[in-house]
Image 1 (cartoon, helix red, strand yellow):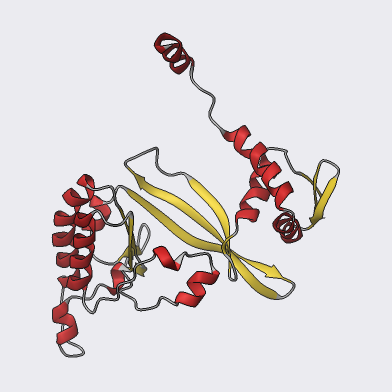
Image 2: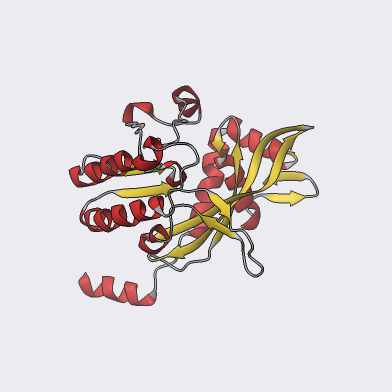
Amino acid sequence: IDAEHALDPSWAKRLGVNLDELLVSQPDTGEQALEICELLVRSNAVDVIVVDSVAALIPRAEIEGEMGDSHVGLQARLMSQALRKLTGAIAKSNCIVIFINQLREKIGVMFGSPETTTGGRALKFYSSVRIDIRRIGAIKDGDQNVGNRVRAKVVKNKMAPPFRMAEFDIMFNEGISVSGDLVDLAVEDNVIKKAGAWFSYGDVRLGQGRENAKQFLREHQDLFAEIRGKVVHNRMPSPSPKADAETEKAD
């Protein structure tokens, strides 16, 4: 649900989005967007619904009004009403709804973080998982920026322990860099050795510098798969003794 009217299909396809399985709606008002969302949830016709973004869900009264008119709390009331209707429907369906939001700054805050999100507090309370995603650095190829280093922090989680963090690369020409994740995790697990600026796997030198190592793995998919297999094996949780005992009992 592209409330920002910003989707570029050709760019999305280049970043790996399967357009054949993507349905796009560009509603005119916030009410229309949330009605479409509710209809899709109740239909069980889709697996994932993305609302981009909450900040762009503009109430009908604001669109039909004049520039400069005051509409205090309209969007917050709209979101609160919509989420009361959506929550039960989502729980009964096999569908996940992802709301993308934007950060704003509260004026006159002396203590604590001045950052807040648009659309009132209802979304914060009703959501099962909230993830704060922000840029923490630039990735450069020489003097040219080619991507961003991004940190994701789980600030709320009803499904698992919260406050976990992860860092990853978003490259401008490919989206999230899987090879970058693999290099980082493999170095942590000592699958890939790092000596100074050089990365190596066994007797194979992957390259000097992280970007060259990433490029090497992209070009050698057999090596990529081998290293990935070792990393996944290292990070798979070992079964608990209780689970083993229950399995033996079942057998």
